[in-house]
Image 1: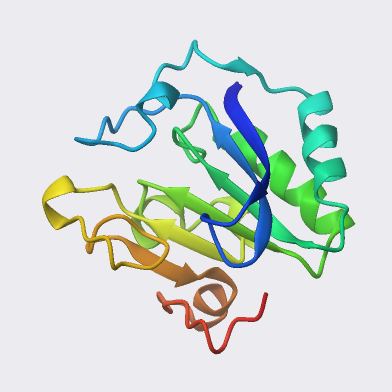
Image 2: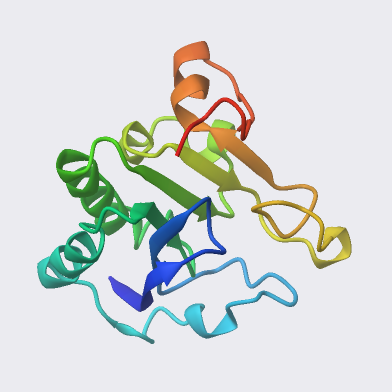
Length: 169
């Protein structure tokens, strides 16, 4: 598994100041993807235990409210094991900080039985569709995508959309 980059202070991928990691590799190849350099599974850098530790160290600051995992495609079969390991270790160390993940895979169709969901607070799911793009959408690029409160969805057994007023950071 590989990753493309780590941002140590990101304010555009989830609420508050976050650390973001962009996984390498994606097969969706969405038209006008904002991150096309992450599509090649052979690009980027090797994702190792040292990478995980670096991300966790960057998350230690009190000003960091959470971790954002994007891509590429963090839930692709080639990446999901590493994504799960990172998410699990993050939640063990920072149980009061949030994890946001962006994926083209659908929560209730492709991901519902995946272990990684136990650690994720918010999932933005669905492929980016350029024709449905709107700059006024919050946390997503196209209107078909959903911003899902994963904890509530797992508890209720169906998709519960994220509400800025309900889910705290």
